[in-house]
Each structure stands twice: as C-alpha cells, then as structure tokens.
Image (tube, rainbow, N blue to C red; front, top):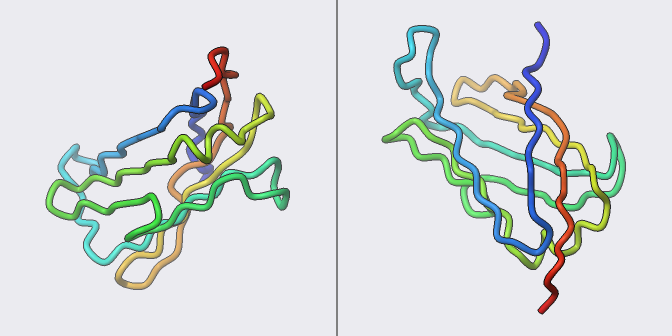
Length: 116
C-alpha cells in the first residue's frame, strides 16, 4: 500500500492549524480512542527537525468525540522556516497497539514579507 501524499502550505511567521477528520470506508467517523499521534517536519528524511509535534499536549489534539485530529504550530516555530520546502509525515499508534503512517508529503513555505 502506498502512503497517501498531501502537500501542506504554511506562511512563514504565522500560527498554523490543520484538522484531519478520520472516516472509515463508508464515510462514517472512525473510532480514534487511545491513539497517539506524532508529526515531524524535517529539512529532508533524517535531516534537521524544524517542528516536532505529538499528542496529547505538544501541538496535536486527538478529538475522540468528533473523530478529528487537530495540529498546530505556533508563529515562533514557523518564523524559523527559512527554506521553501520541507518534508513531513504523520505517525499513529492505535490502542491495539498498531503503528502506521497516515500521510506524508512536502511542507511548502511562503516567505513572510512583513516582519515585525
């Protein structure tokens, strides 16, 4: 099975938020109770870590009631993104436990023009 690819866009120096709704093959909300989620943004595979997010309290919130995963990166981190492109993936450990990757792709950074 090929891992789904999704490119993300982040404006340099901006608070960034993203929400994933988890659904099964019938389009119904998937149970995500007990999931541990981790996301890293790197310069390249094995390269420098630019952002390191994890649930439950480091930038990722697993909303089990609504079957959603919320990601956030503060402005203090995104302002350090000096390259135009990074790479990321999202790893999940389920309650079973089973480890898998949800998605991977590029992080495309739009440079900030206004600097405060």
